[in-house]
Amino acid sequence: MRIKREELVKKLESVLPGLAAKPIIDQSQCFVFSGNKLVTFNDEVACSIDSPFDFEGAIPAKSLLQLLNKLPEEEIEVKVKEDEFLVRAGKKRAGLRMEKEMTLPIDELEQADEWKKLPKKLMEAVKVSLSCAGSDESQFVLTCIHIHPEWVEACDNFQMVRFPLKTGLKKSVLIKQNSLKTIVGLDMTEWSQTDNWTHFRNPSGLVLSCRSYLEDYPDLDSILNIKGSPMELPKNIKGVVEKAEIFSSENIANNSVTVGMESGKIEVRGEGPSGWFKERKSIDYDGDPVAFSISPKLLVEISSKSTKCQLAKDGLRVDGDGFTYVTCIEKDEKTEDKEAEAAEEDA
Image (cartoon, rainbow, N blue to C red; front, side, top):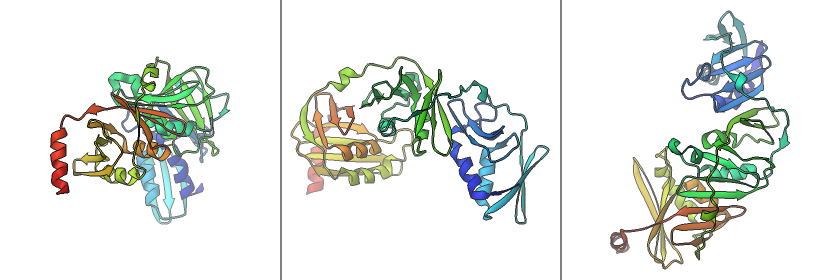
């Protein structure tokens, strides 16, 4: 059959979130064509969309996608012969190994049977929460985003965010941050909950399912209730953060910038293997020197919604447009060194 190459690539790319980076389970690194569906599944995330083909089989995803992206032809011809998926484009020919038997354990995925409209601000709440979830698997629940009937929240023991929102859920669920971030940018409009999965669907028919967990989540109310002295972050902090992130983004496992405050000044610093950047701005602050770390994207997101905050003894609280963010702060014990360094730079 003949097919538009770009249309095929677009469909294959839509199910990429369900592929595994490592071969965790059988065919978890394959595009699986089963019945009338194109499926990917990595045990935590599953994707499915209407199949462009009427055959069944599993094809190595990386090789197929790389091949299609290297071909310049608008249309290609594909067919299956024995255990090969054959591609013809002009004078070019290629054959990819194909497993005709589907061993991908997709049967453990519960099927959504009741779809509801996605709450209007759920995606915004998810985007704000992503950077606050932890990465330490020994504290599993903190690697998840907590979707509660009344709010969405995340915490990594150093910072937390809560976004009040009527989600419409009857019971709370936890979804791993790495799973939930895959729905961002996919224009999801509907969702459904089954016993062990939360399913999302967009107008193109793409269904992305995230494994859900029912473990108890820590009560964060006491952290949210901190009160402190009012202060305001610089309104033009975005440009400073973006320059610092040039270096902090090199730390893939922990992309964070350090924010330090001392009398009349705030400093943002980003550091990575290739170097560092820091910049100071004036600020209306006359307390003891303090510092905290934060995801640069989250700092930009927070400051774009509100620059007003409260500084308490142990934490900084920002009440933004529809959310509350709290981060731990620590006393800066290198006050003298910082002041000497600042004086040297100002000289």
